[in-house]
Length: 199
Image (cartoon, rainbow, N blue to C red; front, side, top):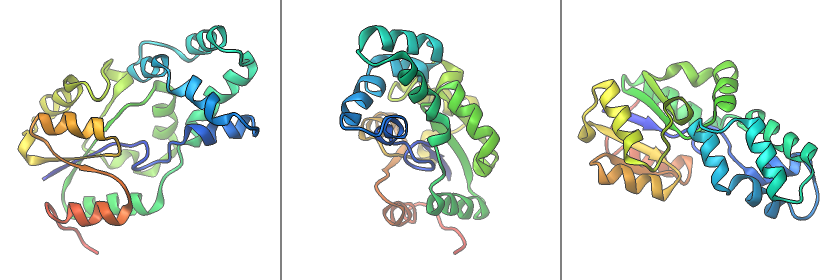
């Protein structure tokens, strides 16, 4: 069985509000995070069609947030993506169990480059599809199809793990078995329906 992992909020932490608070620890961090990370422009960074300098300029123009603060927030993203230890341990056990591992993640170039240099698990995957590198993003069906086609995978022989229900739905529409991630224990319990690994 081929196990396909999302990365953000599954293998590494992704918390936009905490990213903002690391720069401006003041009331309003939730609102600022929404302006910066819930805007369609951020998806274009993930798609690889907008650079960080471009999104800094656009965010500064459309909000009342100072450019130096906007810059600091975007620059804080890569280092905020810290591994989730219990999930990395599970990933390692699955690999030791002889299963093929793949990654499918919406992620910009800077974050992917940072993790490639700092995350020990980055090299454990048989292959990775990072959205910015292929100019496609989840939940678009094309990015799932790209992963399958490029790696000669059959949809029915894959299990996809993601924290987003929208992304899960897209995978299931393509016939890919899927698990929405909520917690380490819940993920382990649901994965055992498909595979086993050494404890």
